[in-house]
Amino acid sequence: MKPDTATVVTVESETAPAAEPTVPLTLNGKPVKAFAGETILNLCQRVGISIPTLCHDPRLPAHGACRICVVEIEGWPRLATSCQTEAAAGMVIRTKSAAVRQARHVMLDLLFSNHPNDCLTCKDSGQCKLQMYCYDYGVIDGSYRPFGRKRQAMDTSNPFYDYDPEKCILCGQCVRVCTELQCTDAICLEGRGEATRVATPNRVGLLQSACVSCGNCVAVCPTGALTPKRQPDRLFGIKKTRTTCSYCGVGCQLNLLTKDDRLIGVEPVQGAKPNDGMLCVKGRFSWNFVQHGDRLTTPL
Image 1 (tube, helix red, strand yellow):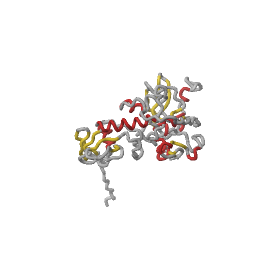
Image 2: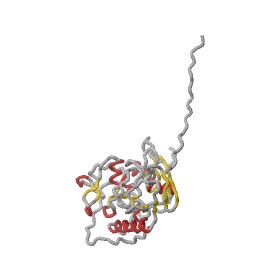
Image 3: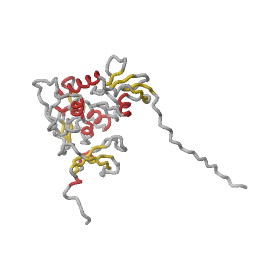
Image 4: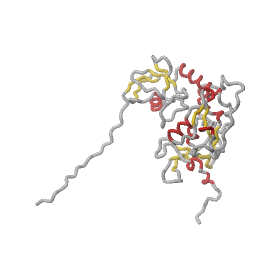
């Protein structure tokens, strides 16, 4: 009698081919194709067209707070926010028309009118998105600066970073990251109109709030409103070196920021697993041990 034989079935796994964009439209006079459900902003970024943004984070749903990413769509009665508008078949989109540039100029002018004109001495100079866009769109100084407005005091209570409300443009990035990604709910937007500001619940201050000092709010701030205390140099001429955080076994990805062969800071890497731009207090702020005088430099 023949022994029972098992039948082995070999299944060949094949990687499904990537979907092709199928939505035809015209972008700045050129025919392109978008993916179904793709926003105009994502389409532009994919094909190499730069769109300014101050409140966009690919990890969060778009909410169109800054209005800087507006584009012109032929046949539409008004400009559309590219971060919220899905590309549709037959659209004729212009990202650099006179109307678009004028709208962006006005929005930047309004934002800069409530922002200190101290770029020469600001710690964030060189990486501030507001500074960069104002230069690109010819905003030299705010045309609508209020007279007699009382200056808001800085909150320096946190041991790792400072908050300067004078430089805040109320984009909401810090609040959304703290609430939706970090899930700490340490800060919120309070007030209405010109009285709106970023604050802690019950105005207890950052030190007494639920803040865990992760600094993820600092990483997404597009201006100098949130800055690390330990940032001796402005970030001109820095070198970025990709590495893995050494504090625990999670393996968070970050960039070491070095200047003149000295470590001056770190930044998380968005889009990289497992942290996708997030860090804890140790990974973000406790990097000074690298240059500590007590470190062993030779074998015992």
